[in-house]
Amino acid sequence: MGDFKFPYFFDYPPYFTLQPVQDTREKQMQLWKELILRYCQHHKCFIINLEQEFPLFQNLSIQRKLSFEAREVFLAALVAEGKAEWLDKAHKKCLVLWRSIQEWSEMILQLVRDNAMEDGVLTLDEIQSGDESRGTELAGIDRFVLVRALKLLEQRGKAAMFKGKAGDDEGVKFSAS
Amino acid sequence: MGSGSRWAERLLESGALSDAGRPLLGPGEVECQLLDGVDIEVVDSGVEGDPLRSGLLILTNARMFWVHQHSRSAFFLPLSSVSRISAPRKGLKSVFSSTLRLRGAAAAHSSVTLLLSFRGHASSFDNLVSQLGAVLQSRAWETLPAAAVNPSTASASTPSSHWNPSRAGVSGILRKEQEQWEQTDKNLQEAFHDLNALMGKAKEMVLLADKMRARLLTEGSASGSQQELHDLLLSVGIASPVTKESAGALYHQQLSRQLADFVGSPLQSAGGMLALVDVYCLFNRARGTELISPEDLLQACDLWDRLDVPVMLRRFDSGALAIQIKSKSDDEVVARIMRLVDDLRTGVGAREAAKCLGVAPALAKEHLFSAEARGFLCRDDGPDGLRFYTNFFKDAQFP
Image (cartoon, rainbow over all chains, first blue to last red; front, side):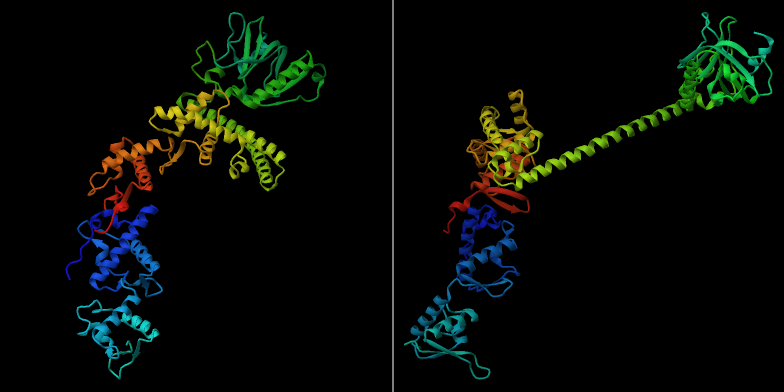
């Protein structure tokens, strides 16, 4: 995984100023939404905390950074599009779904098929960082997202989560055949 | 003049007479009243003497003269030394003549009473008395230079004991100025008193006008009387609420169109934009009569929004107002700005734009904003302030 390649307009100062003119702002939002998704995907970043620095939101070489208001606006736009979710009422923590929950659940099923585990059992930990998922996009998946994806599979009857014995991790039994 | 009248020489002062026998008056001293055939005698004063008979009594604003033309003698009494005048006691004398008692200080005597009597028409004497009263009351001699009170061709180096030295010199002048100032102040106060009364009336008028306005607002569609009322208010100079709500009174609409027609060619020659004050002058000069007020002009311009005219009123943040041709000059300005913004690295600030366009920075800023609003520029709000770049957002894409 190489360095993230920033687009050319990332070096243009106006990119970091929230544009007041409506049409221009719309375009700016589109660019930022896409950039956030791409960046998060590249770095396997799931959560953006507005109250903390996030490397994407500044460009030190041109000495510009997005204002708090701008960050809020762009993340809210992602949420409105369904590509992100607020994790708290105060809208300070944002879950970025550069893949939708649906897509994650499909990837899990794919993993299961690839490893012939249609009736098998896996711990959540194993899905996150086990041998099976190494090299796939699932590696390093956020626990919260994973659980949501598994819940979706549960609803489809393709899986069933269970709590492990004392000290053991949560697990999931698949019935994906 | 008999020896019995010596008292006069002692008590009263000798007045100088001109060659024609008229008393010499001092600067600012004017005669107020003359009465011929007046006697003066001294009474109740411990001084004996015969009366001065049948002289000409001359009252000035500073002194009272008694002049005997025949003997060319004249005496005077400075009015400042008169402390009291009164009607005489009833006596034989008063039956046949009009009399007046004068009490005052004279020479070495602190209190001396003189009796004036006159055998002629009582009304003439009454006139004199009232004049005397008036002069004594107004103390007219106090505003005169000290010399008026005691002019004399003789060497009067010793001033009379009745002359107030504080009236002389610089302090005297200053005091006089002070009194003049106080008088002016008093006059102004009286004048303002009238002005306040006038303003009170004006307040009532404004209240009345407001009531009429309120009525116009509440009244429904009695359009005939409403129009009349509205025109009445307009003629008094009060903007009718109806005008603001609707598309405007017919008058303003017509004015607005007329203005739009008129302003076309001056705008062209001025390169597309004119300050509103200039338009006001040009328009009124062209009209000649029936000049319009600044309020009318502003309203007419505001109406342009609703009419389809090729001119517009431009409001700048500084508060300045200008009229410009709608699209033309803006395009030109934008073109010039775009030529300036060829380097995406530094952008264009108000200062650079001002230099390029040849206008004040505030105006240049307005032009930048308008170019931004039209989508030609985008802004960078950085540590160096507001700067503008070509709107790259329009065509930006991920590579």
